[in-house]
Length: 333
Image (cartoon, rainbow, N blue to C red; front, top):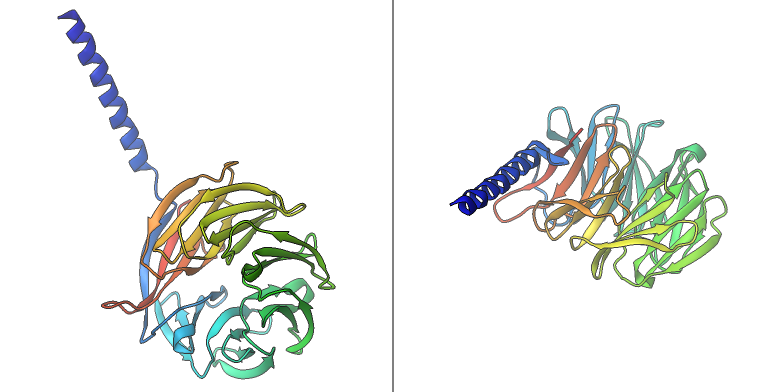
């Protein structure tokens, strides 16, 4: 009888411990909380990258499969304008200084410029072929655009003229600029490599050969000087020392990743995947372990994390019974 009482006491203790842990787990909010969905309307096919105008609360959506760019009023939560006549818009950037939207077109290799709230066509810069990812280098008043079979074109934002081109060995996908060290880190998935360029001269400082393929998305952790990359073949996340190119850590992640964001405030990493998930990794963890995996929908692989708004916007293409939309996630405090 005495032994039975002891066994029951231990069992009750474990049950209480489990119950307490469950309460604690339930009290911790998800790092990304879906707030609402903004319907894009009659938009078919693939959606590529996004850009934001913080001053006017506008979100720009490159509707690649539709040959359009949607303009979303984030306060009204609706599309207020649509730019048409484009050719597979991919990269997109908004410049507050001249109130201009820059759209890189994969179909004809051009960068189209639209100005003001009237979205008047202002300029066209022809790069040659497959204009893709765009990055702003505001200290030097220029725009960097990956294009063609291997190059990054530099566009002067004052004149909207192409002023230089940095050669690469293959078509660039995501690339990131670090102003402190004047380096550009460039994903070259066709070569299974990352190229490191001098941001001023375009001279190639190094090439890092990679074990895995499909290195499309990239972000930088400037505090720890690391290049963060997601791979598709196989689905992996890798952190690299940007001084040597050595692998710091590598973990499994969701598949068909196209965007990756580093949240410096919360020390988290968000990876948006076409297999229907957002993976959230702990950036402070030496092994970058997964904090959680958030279900989305198949094909939703592009997005935009806006730290100033504490929001992550996810582009969701049209499905059988649902129109294309932007899912708005609030980042937990």
